[in-house]
Length: 247
Image 1 (cartoon, one colour):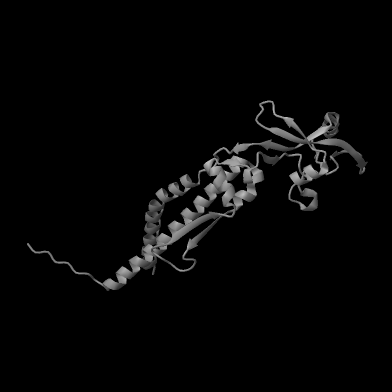
Image 2 (tube, helix red, strand yellow):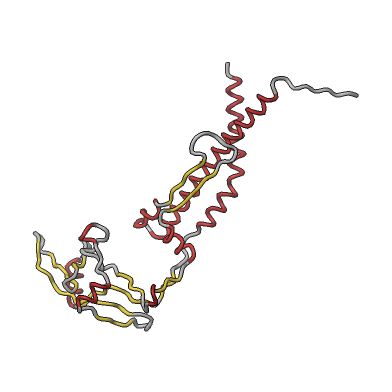
């Protein structure tokens, strides 16, 4: 028994069409997976740090290469514009004072003019140098004995505005924000009764909790990529077949 086979058409054209289909499938797969990895990393940040961390979350960016055209060997890159922050919370870094310093000076939530940060002059923190220069700072030990609280005396400022709200001044260096919280005036009077406000926590070191899993997100993306490629290639073939079948 003899069997015979022959190829109808131009083999080079058939192979070229397969290459183009593979290129389109590869680009589609890498674009989709790169975007998914980026979105997963953004969700990690917001779920770990809350809505106030949108800036850090949106610092995750992505790019697919080649930037134009098609390729059988595309690449996707996901990176962050704040790598030091991400690295510290991915490793659970241990942070110590620089230059042989004994303590880290960590600003408290009170240490921002009017309770705001990063909004021009009114959002600037009081610095350790200002604390020293003022001659008003004093220390209170933690109950655990592992650190200190660096405080300033608190006094009442001149009441201003229609509502005549109580203003709190920390050592004459900054106004302490009271916000629009419920019971604001009672809270402000309670602060005045204590007469002090904590401006810095002084700790010998800080161990950050591991909150992010960048490596895991990348590995999950790599595992999903072959399946995406096969699915995209199947859709490309189906699209080509329907195009050829159309009158």
